[in-house]
Every structure is written in structure tokens, then in C-alpha cells.
Image (cartoon, rainbow, N blue to C red; front, side, top):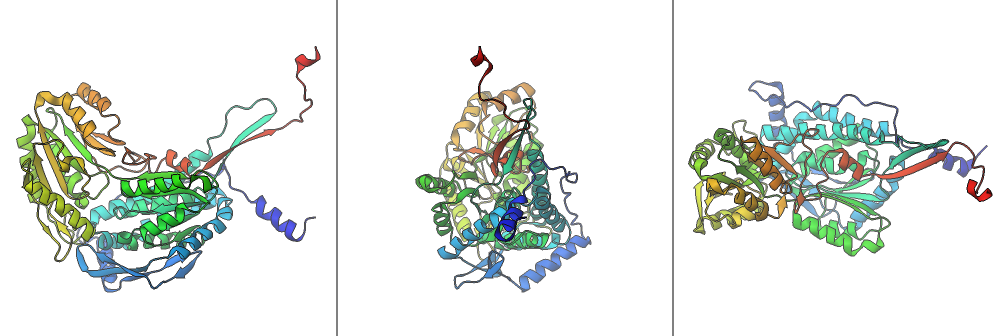
Length: 560
């Protein structure tokens, strides 16, 4: 009988994750959207939570290995549509604390990786249920105030999409674990162990989607990895609510470490560590390139080649054929371009109209945009609210000033900016006679749609224009009733978008239905959440077991 240290070692290593689980998860469906009609219970709960958060800003610590830490480097998160108000106070980690967070990941990694699959899954399924119920009003309020999302936009993101990310991640994880060899030689049993990665994952979140922040660290953690998570300064409150929710759901200390920090300092610290196993990123293309370059420069020091998963910028298009339904184009463009102030990764920002439909569609856009209410995010009558911060406001304003000065451009509606109370930018439509105008090429990330009118008989050359104008390839929409022309356009624009829409707006991908991600300068196109992304956070090990003894070391022809 084993005793002492040997017994403890044997027990520790006898527990292992199931790579082909016998358990079956509950049926997974997309989370229904909420009811915010006047007098509804949820609307009242959200309004109460918004009032509470306004009165009592959150104090958000660094959390490493379950220990809450507060430093002297204090930061605040402002309400974008009421920027004199603070919604949260938080603390930056220095290099030593970031390194401590990494060591906490490494200490927790093996035990978590060897936790059976059904127990890891249960944490995230419970988190989804908590979010659907107990935390629903809280996550909505934190996203409404912290990121200035309206009720509908907060619900689509912070509730429905986050729940879908967690539930569908479990489903795809189960699908992956069941991917086992189907062929076995006589006397041989083959199987695959879907291991976590050897090292730690660094997750870096954006401001614009609460759900993305939760997915960036949640998916790697589900698959047995440990993560150091840098939440976005301007989405700190909602990031904290999700992290706290996962702790209540049973996520062990140290599996995910919550480490707000200066961006360059965080990036430089993670990329120089030998145990970096992967980066899970959503943000700007320049930042992702900087991280990629840093990994390349340090490639010889790593224990393993780090996995880089990134979703970055976009210059998304609506391409309209003369056969298109004008009403659908108008409504789809208003929704895609101006919901959440054009700050969705997938928002349309360049549009190509045929001359035969241009007057009708532009007039429709002007009429529709003029009726939109821009106001406080918690006001149920607001269609959209403020942009995220002063830097974003200033950047968008500079593009609008450029458009007003450029003789090739005409602002047909909007163009106003006011940052006295909140960072408000009017939904804006710009017409241009230059298809390579700065506003048609560069990512603005605001409520600005620039329109170029082409002659109807220039359809094919316009396809080339769409393909060549932007370095990005995230989303795009083709509005066309002619099936043959639609298919030909799709083939011509095959690599212009990771998510392409036919006769629909360029936003609104749904987990489990249209997995999201783009290529070219828009990212690695690993598709969140999908089987492809799930597999990215695993390191498969092929196992061959001989069930009968090896009886010889020679081959039959040798004895002849």
C-alpha cells in the first residue's frame, strides 16, 4: 500500500478530465430577449438597479488567487452619457501584481485542467442560469450605465449573448470531446485526449460588448485553461459583475484572475513570460499587431508556441443592387449604422448605392435618422446614446470636421457633436463622390455612414471597389433580389467579410447561428463561439493502446 507523499501523488494524478464524456448536457437554445414594456417587472427592476448604481458607485478590486487587492493607482469609470458621474472605482496592477496573477494561473492550471468535464461545464451552465435570473437586472444596469447601451442593446449583449456564449460553449465542448477516432486496427484502441494548453492564457477585453469580455476568458477556462484577464477600463463594471457571477457559480480561485492594468504594461508583461500559451483578444488592429509582433520577438523563450486569437477592426459595407428592396436597405442601414452609436464591430460605415435608387434611399435615411432620439441610455425612448469616452468623441468629431471641409463630401444629416453632459454625436450620413475618400477607407467606430453612388451599369466594377477599398474583412451585406447576380457578387466578395449577409443588415450575428469573426486586418477569424474556437484552446493528444502483447520484433518475410 502507498503511503505518505507517494499516496498523495497517486491520488492527485488519478483524477483526470473526461475527453469522451458519458454525460450529456441539457438541450441548448438561444436565450429569449427580455420584455421591457411599460409596467413590466424587469423594467422596474432595471430602473431600481440603475438608481442604486448611480447612488453607490462600485469599488472594484484586483482579484488574484481569490485575494482582493487595492493599490494606490486608483482609476474611475464614468457614465458616458453623464460623464460627471462615476459608476465605479477600480485599481491598476503594477508589473509585480501582473506577474503574481500569472503565477496564480500557473498554480491553478493543472488541478482545473484535470477537473472532470461535467464539473467544469456545470460552472458555466450555472452562470448562464444565474445571468438569466438573479443577475439579469444587475448586468443590464451595469452595461446601460457603464457603456451607455440602451435597454434593447444591453439585453441583446449582456444578457442574451453572454448566456448563449456560455451554453453553446459547453455544447461545442461536448461535441469536441466526442470527436474520437472511428477506426482501430485489430487489437488496438485509439482515442484522443483534448488537453488544455500548457501555460496560461491572457484575455484582453474591449468596451463595446459585455458578452465578448465574458467569452474571452470564459471559453479558454471552460476547456481547462487558467486565464489572467484584463478588463477594459470603460467596461469595468459589467466585467466585474460577470467575474463575480462566475465566482458564485463555483469557478475556483486562481482559474481566472481579474487584473485591471495599463494596456502596454499588461501586454509587455505577458509576452515576455515563458509560459504564455495564448492570447484571447478583441480590440483594435494596431494593438493586436503590437501583441503579435511582441510574441514573434520572444518566440524562442516560450515553452510552447502561443495561440493568438483576435477579433479586431472593421470597415463594414452595405452594397445595394438596383433590384434591391429600398425599404429594407433604409431600415437595415439605420439599425446597423446607428444602434449603439455605430460602436459595434460589425456596424456598417460605408455604403454603395445605385444611381436609380439613391434619391429614394437617401431621403429615407434622412427621414428615419431625423426621427431618432439620442439621449440617456436608461431612457426607454432613446434609440441610441453617447459614445464611450472623450478619446472616441474627439476622433469621431475630427472625421466629421474633415467631411465638412472636404469638397468631395456632403453631410446630408447629422454631423453635430456635444460633450457638455455626455459624449454625444449625432447619427450622421455623409455623401461622397470619391469612393476612396478617407471616410470610406478608415475605421471611425462611431455613428457615421458614408455613401457613394455608382452608375447602375457599373455593378461589376463596384464589386472590385468594395473588395479593394478597405484592409478589413469583418462584415458586409449585399442587397439584391436577382439570385444569379447575388451569387456572383458573393463569389466576387468572398474574402471581404467573415460574416456576409444577403438582404439583411451587417449586424446582429447570433451565437449558434452565425458564428462571428473576420479576416484580413479584422482578425484571425476563429469564430466566437464555435467548435473551431473551442478547439483553439485545446492541445489534442492522440493515444494508442495495444490490447494484446507484442509477440515479435521481426516481419514475416524475414523468415523466408
